Length: 86
Image (cartoon, rainbow, N blue to C red):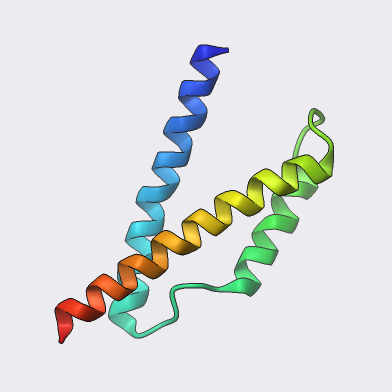
């Protein structure tokens, strides 16, 4: 269980790194940091292909929180880059 928890944490942090990259590119292009439509697409895709385990509603709650935290990180990065450009 400890190794699995460590892998989950590493995957979440890797996602944060990707969020940082994407937020930087979007900011440079003048695109909005958040894309609700893309989030809905990702949610549908993940839930559609998730193996059995937790109930769908429980998995969806976890993913919604992960997406919320990712969105907050992306928005913070965009604001930081906007300040640097001024």
